[in-house]
Image 1 (cartoon, rainbow, N blue to C red):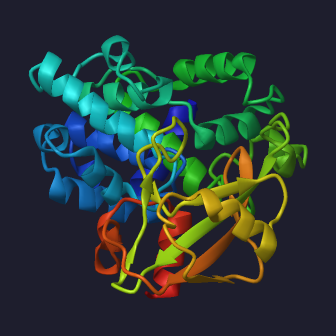
Image 2 (tube, one colour):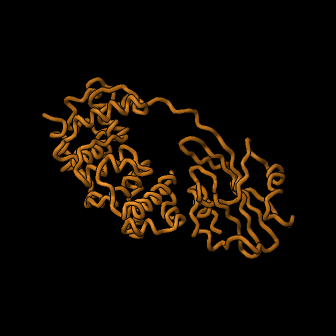
Image 3 (tube, rainbow, N blue to C red):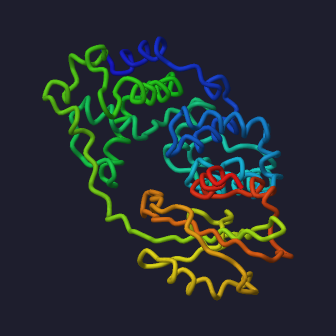
Length: 346
């Protein structure tokens, strides 16, 4: 029996009812796929609903301000996804008259769209037989066929892509792609997969060889760097504070944060006071400084860990410029800052 002939009946019974499975609108499918990159369905679903409610068409998204888009994205992380989403919507509206590309070869040219996303859109919306390869697919295929090629290598991608392409049901590519992803997410899970009830358990090589926990193979990543962040929370007599927008390229580009002092090592109170003397909003010395969190908050990103302290500066003077405390929630900020704002409860 063919692989797809076992997979498809499983999907028919076990698939989750999700809003993006009820449409073939390429804008909605594209939006869902971008949100679900690096994000699990349970976390991504509320964001998808929020986006299609506030930006029901690609024209609405294209005409929105970037800060608004980033604010709706706040908490999902990997903010380049939101910036690319917004930029690409503008390109489609302006250059393509709002018409979404309808082939894999054209879709993959869009900024922020890779092989997986292009394959998903092309197959689901336009019935093009191009196979998706994501973390779920890697896991299912590596275990079932006993493939040891590391999945985070170019050789691994080519091997798994070719295999997925060979297995795909050419008549129903959309169903096949969604089925194999769902199978990886719900049945062939990373930990504690449901092997006893698996329809492939009689022919799965990893199960036969007791290698479920060994596959897929992934090469170790580069060493994660460590940084020390000291955020300065300035509180004036007239209930204002200071936010800065990050203009430099990086994961938090165009998001807002409290003034930041970076250091190579943890700072004590004296060192912090020396470091903040150059901040341009400190026009006088009538302020007190205290540490909000005695224990560093470690914010883990894929490539670095941010060891973070929040320092509270209370001033006895008014701040003419600056932001009203009541307006803080209007600005798009990294999750690390959002968590502090919620916890501090100004």
